[in-house]
Length: 302
Image (cartoon, rainbow, N blue to C red):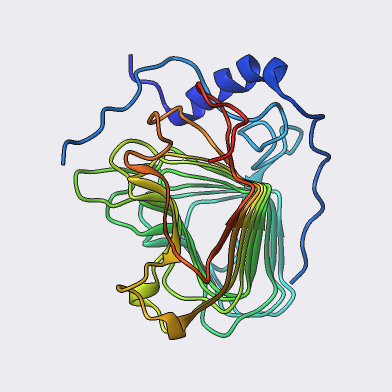
């Protein structure tokens, strides 16, 4: 039987609650604006001590009754609200302060299922599920700048999110990406940012993926003001690629990057990623207070 990451995570939540060494985390509030390692064969499931997001705490609330969306797929009116809808096309946001909430965005024909077009601000995706239906010809569930993704459930696309500037991803669940032999999946990838907050999410990518979170400074004009904090992370070659490798990346592009208070799970590989939990984290990148979530070193520092 092939276990999905979603199934593995669900079981692990149940198994690991009793091992927690600390009180459950309070609900966070939204933030403002060359041998290949062998993956673990396991039917257990992952992370959280009931304090990290999973399918039960993200996406469309179970009490929501969805109706089919009949509005435009290109949104040009500022302040548009889309609530409790089933959307089967590709959304392009070309206006400020658009809100999409309690909605399912499901399509296998999108390059980006949601695109926040250049120059927009204030896009809010709240309690939204984006299902790319394992589309290998597309790119990511969400792409762009000037957006907040709160309690989002992203899956079935090659990448979960391509994050530009002024982006917040919080209390969300990114998992079970669409994968091929050369898909190079990432949970969240930034190709350049002046502000990115990745806070209190569960991001698990399967064997063959690149990273749960990758800051691709080599492709960027800048990589600044990035917070990767209090997430549950697993998988990839390295689980987090933190944006600066001395001698490879340009130091002038990088400032104010912090990777802190994260928990790294061994559900995919014994070292979280195939080769380890974190790479490209030379100063000025600050790495602090990250621990193993489970495995033989559970709750010990990385």
